Image 1 (cartoon, helix red, strand yellow):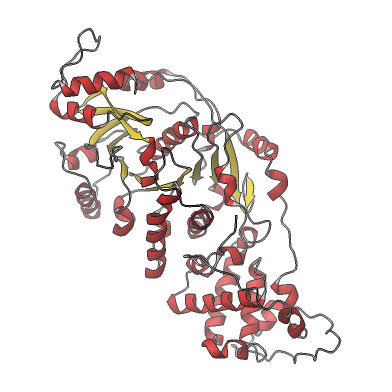
Image 2 (tube, rainbow, N blue to C red; image 1 turned 90 degrees about the vertical axis):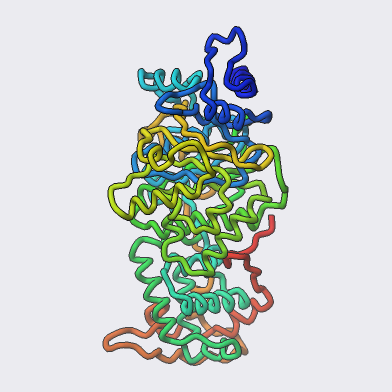
Length: 533
């Protein structure tokens, strides 16, 4: 604990009188003294800022988050332009300095500056003086990623098999019946060794299962209707037309890359650059959930630790929850609940707490709430709902939340004992790194210099379900499988099979599939493939 922390704690304990000889000796208002006591932690903590009371900033009452409770998850919320991104940057750079890896989703393209030292200036010096911060410019070790290589970054891809039916159904916006049918398709492909590396593999298996040859394969477990198959295939085709083929395939990204330390021992900051796919919000939000699901599957149980193994910032969180099925929301809730014991902390970033389901919100122990607007009746309703989610406090939170300036927030976190700290209106510190994007050419150089670039840059197209179901000469002694019959279709439309692989594609099915029996894949909570690490 720093000298200023000792002073704050002593001042609070004595009813607000600072220790004799302290140059900043002042009588703290009782609410500020309570804040000073509530945030005077003994273990390592991240510095957020200083308490605000009646318009005055009190550096004698620093507001902090214990490092040990960051796996209890958190919420950073607030209206557009209130400083949420800078708050993420402030927390992320301190985590890195403490040796904790960080994952940041950069939706707007302005987080890359965390890799470069910040720029000194009058505003920075003024903010630092107000909150008692010794500001110092510093950049932090970063890796930059991009979904499927669209944009500047190391390509992050997932195989369709690895992504799984539950998450894919969310991306394709399928209903519950269609989601169940997609799960059946995955189950068949898994059990028969038909690898679903990319979307053309999935289309091939779907078309096969509604052909005359393939229909008997699922007869004992309900079958797949050609109508549902048609919906799924059309959804996949529309998805491909949006450029989604780039996101699925090999080499599949190994999420353990996110847990690496930097060579100097600081935590590596993994920045997923998303500006190039801002028009595909459901895709990137669901991909973030895939990354979390992979971490959940691969990490061992560690219980409570003195510092998290990774802190994961989930930006634009409302996109994940909007339109989600009940089963999907239950899976998210369970993942958030259980991943804590694996040493992973999750911060959801969104505009208002109501964007997050109550079952998930109840598990977010650390809260940084930036300003909210109350321009409409709906805004006022959201404001009142937000106020009710905070512990009781001496603040008039409705008034405070609508009056906060940029870079100010209402904070409550968990103490080292797991109890909520006092609610504190807080003027936040200034990040030490660059508050804005680095130039594109610098970003490109950093990506190409990464040791991961050679591993993931080039896509690979191995033999998989599409090739195994494609037309090849039949093996000796194996009878030819008859031509697949056409699936009922509208006037002028091709059959499902023709749309995928053309006519005559199933001749060697018995040979190509039969040799793969007994290779069924075990799937996890989200239907993603379980990994062995």
